[in-house]
Length: 403
Image 1 (spheres, helix red, strand yellow):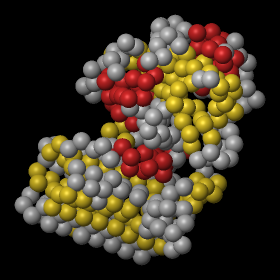
Image 2: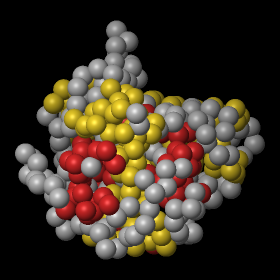
Image 3: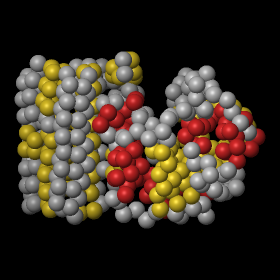
Image 4: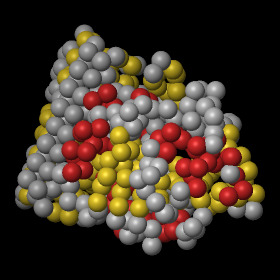
């Protein structure tokens, strides 16, 4: 049994803008609960008792949240004052954690099955790998006979075997990190440490669908997959004349009003109001204190806490930030006329999202006027104001006003 684990959750997650501007990335939701909480649930299932979490950016929000959960695990926080690379991050646990321990990047999906597979290599330094269609944004791994040969940072175009960000370590990893120099980026890279002892690094495959939640649209994709195993629970109120076809989680204090149709896997948190006469489709997650109102259709969308679509709205394949409100008649498109994958402008670069359906990524405290239209692939920063009848397309910085 492996009783120790380390989660690396200190990074700012700048690629998750605008969501990470107000919310630390580990607290972004996956199936209605924070990513890091989902990871901890799986670690508990395989017997982990002592969890070490490396925190830095907005660290008090992470510790405050986890300290208020009822997870059956002892948590020790390690503060990374300066971020000097992934190797430096892991090395912060030196002298604090001993024996075999799981080590996870804080932005990936993990499950009990893969952790059990990793546990079979107890006593060995082990890295999980997975095959992706495009390895250009990942560390591409070359191995032979189950052992590491090399890792190419920000690898190659095309199908590649990559570092999945899930490891089984022991004290030997700290010695390896101590022996490396700074990279050309001026950081201590975990991959350099692994390469330096490559003959000791065992390689095993990640089983199932793997997802790195690096960009906002990745959160939608990860949520889609996670929701396929949505666990039914009804703790709220369902009025008469409500149709439910699928798996529904309904939190305490939430009400589904008459005339509403729920279709597919849907997760509704606490103190939400849905309806009357709403249509809520598969993959939709309401994180709490949300309102989906009369004649509104929502499909495969994440509503962060307090976000509302109260009147005659269509929202598909989108993320709606905390306390944002869609004015009556606001519609969000999610499909190009030519049906090609949707490109976005993010952090100043044009990026192919890889998604054929993608609506909008909307930050916190955004308000739209009546009958606003938001084009597919639009990104709105925090505190944006959109006027009545406005046509929105592209990316807008925080605090923008769109007439």
